[in-house]
Length: 345
Ligand SMILES: Cc1ncc(COP(=O)(O)O)c(C=O)c1O
Image (cartoon, rainbow, N blue to C red; front, side, top):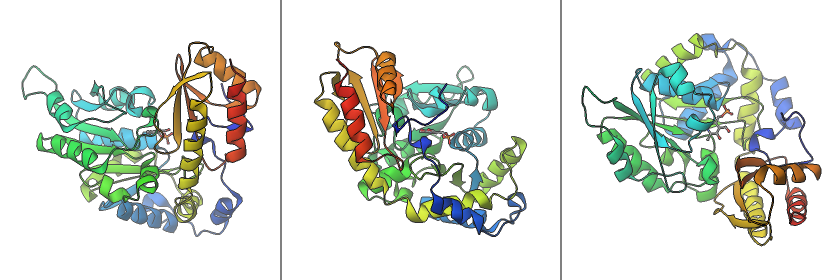
């Protein structure tokens, strides 16, 4: 169990602490009751994110997991099937939420770097039949987390969504790191979300906030999502103390994601030269996935030894590590990580 941030914290971009300026934004904000549409900062944040994603409306939620789980519940009925890549967050890290909360089946597809092709979607849509589950929803992740923060090309992402739509499926975009894709490519988030019925962005990852994500879609979708937000206990009160920090992050922490990407690329390139590392996946954004060489200990033992040198990384396979850059790590932390990894035989 991890309780304390290490000195060189590469476990995840979720480990950032809110900056002083961000906290100060929360001190002076006007407050109201969000569930009565009376919290000004929350209304402003939802309007800004809806516009950013090219959607009609949006709602503020405590977490990205709640965005995904509410979207799945709104788009599906129990017994339906959801098409996504095998390494999707909704499969590996949402506590079985799609099954427990929506009663849906997952159709995990082996993608290339966390991405599908339109043909793969068409191949996995089940023909209408009384025997088969109804294929009902496609979920894509931009960027693809376990594929190393890989960025879907915009045409491929929209072609996959279009293939799902023409087969009668709804489409949902997990945009936990969508703004990383926007900054890495210069392509606006709305272009990536164009063929999706719902999409969200996280504030607790690269943007550095302690709480929050915003889910967007049509007005009808958001009306249904609000019902579940309340039913599942996600409706809050004076959320302005949180959303003031999110607004601050939108204004001050988006462009700087480029620094995280540059640091991740430099770490990836230097890791690839170390004897303990067999291969590094291509680095598109702020996530580096590295596979250990046969001479190195397994991933758990390697992570333990790094931890002894105050460097934290994530174990994502028996011989695979994940390293994530963010607001709270810089080039000196990168040097410490490389030095610690160089000491591993
Ligand atoms: C791709 C992806 N989707 C969803 C989530 C869930 O977000 P949260 O931690 O806010 O629930 C994460 C969290 O890291 C993620 O990486």
